[in-house]
Length: 146
Image 1 (cartoon, rainbow, N blue to C red):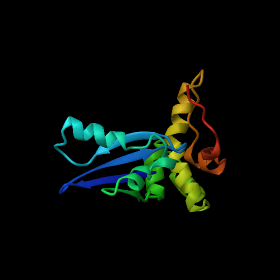
Image 2: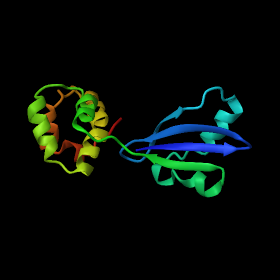
Image 3: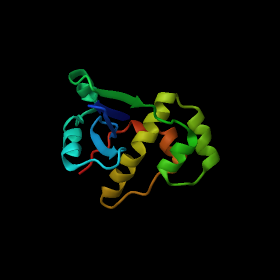
Image 4: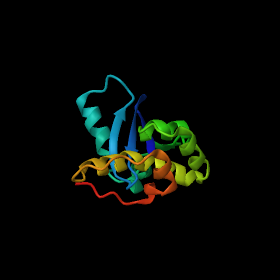
């Protein structure tokens, strides 16, 4: 999930986007306000929660901070691009349409982790066709990464 954190203090506004993985751990921080000085960047980073469950912490503790969830786009084209192994599009899309929206979101979010997991195996595993990844609900698997 992604959250936009906006700070509006003393007439100045700055914002960033914090992205969390399927385990709720912080993955990326993207500053969306150009021209911030190092002190501003460090302060903004200090209020970004390392775990998604605490993403709203800053808004609760600072009246000048606003935290809002950015809705995830859940569509087959997003899955198709995220999964990356582009074979059997029609069959994959048919499997996609059988999933609930929550399952679709999880399938998208887990795809990068699945690919990372299979590449670290010894020997590396071939990627499942997207249809099988969806049909076998591999997005529900726990992929332990080294």
